[in-house]
Length: 274
Image (tube, rainbow, N blue to C red):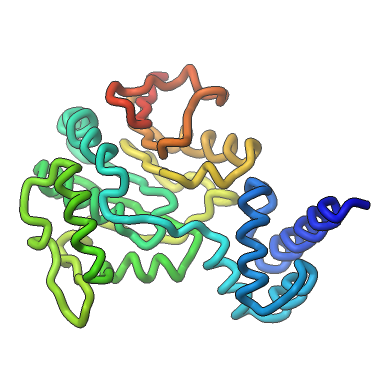
């Protein structure tokens, strides 16, 4: 048997064990990126094999926490891809102005930077007071960071550039105070945000939304799991609601392709039309 085939079997056994013992289901994640991250974890744990990681994860809950933190994707910044937020301001906000109350689901919110970015944008457009933002992630550790709303101060210069490119209307520093090398974002930005754990792989819809944002998450899932998540979003989105995806993600070639139209502007905003 080829070494690569043996490695695939070991990964299947590892993921099956985690699913049965802990309930987290990574079995339908895209295999190539999954392998890279698993081997990174193996090196971080000073191990030499996938089987060794399996034994440690199943017998050491703290190792499982580290595994979960490392395997979930937590790459984010404030106003990440500024043109996405600029288009949200130009194309989506006029639609939202017609709604008396706006429910937003930010799925896979990671450590919260993009959720606060959206809160700032909605505040500047005079809509935040009638919004409820549900920010969810599989990873409890990053959710704690998101709830705190405290980020390294040395990132603020980069975040300020993103904010201005995204059409920001004020001085970005008005939204946070500085202390001990950190930026602490204003508490009023959290008033309409509910942070909660939600697993796109196994959990169901929990509300009906006008906006769903899920960026750069689906690229880590295989086609089967992507289909499940698209079905979940379709069930959760009101008619004429907006779905926002990452640049490498698309509604094309999904069973729901004909149910959505893409907004003009180049970013991946899709409006449900049926």
